Amino acid sequence: DAGITQSPRHKVTETGTPVTLRCHQTENHRYMYWYRQDPGHGLRLIHYSYGVKDTDKGEVSDGYSVSRSKTEDFLLTLESATSSQTSVYFCAISELGVPGELFFGEGSRLTVL
Amino acid sequence: AQKVTQAQTEISVVEKEDVTLDCVYETRDTTYYLFWYKQPPSGELVFLIRRNSFDEQNEISGRYSWNFQKSTSSFNFTITASQVVDSAVYFCALSEASNNDMRFGAGTRLTVKP
Image (cartoon, rainbow over all chains, first blue to last red; front, side, top):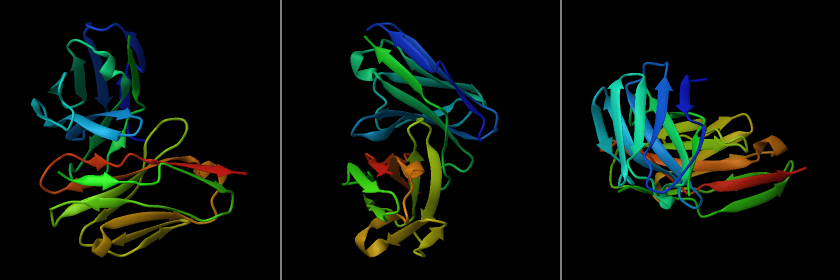
């Protein structure tokens, strides 16, 4: 199994509070991704990174920011959480980027009250 | 932007039946990659297969087979002699060579009853 760890795995927070989710990999893969999973939508890309300090927006990036200061860590931040950001968040890594398969973390369930 | 449609929201079969999960995609790129992932009730996402746009050969892996047809923009997944352990949500996904956004379909929830 790919070495991907997400933390926290579960979080309940209140509207307006900041939240940071962490993804840590031990595979030394160049590409890292944050997706959110919602019923009826499958998985949608929030942000991705193609190297240290190199990030770009995905399909649903509004309200989210990311940072990657080390190869192994990719942080997703909700500056001011809203109820619409209640979701399951998955981190994924890829060695090849576009042509390659993604390996996913176990997911982080976030509830914003 | 690319798009993936999985029209079947839920499918229920009895063990040992064959079942086909449909996937239709849209893309303007000539180079693209198609994927299937499985999400069992435990929640993790498991990679099943990748196909590139230049390889239309069908693939069989045990009870699983995939039919890629560019003429109909489809990449269907068949499970032969289904088993209870096949119960999961299955996602079809598409990556284009021109961008880094792997697009997923909404998923098909397969329930295999004993």
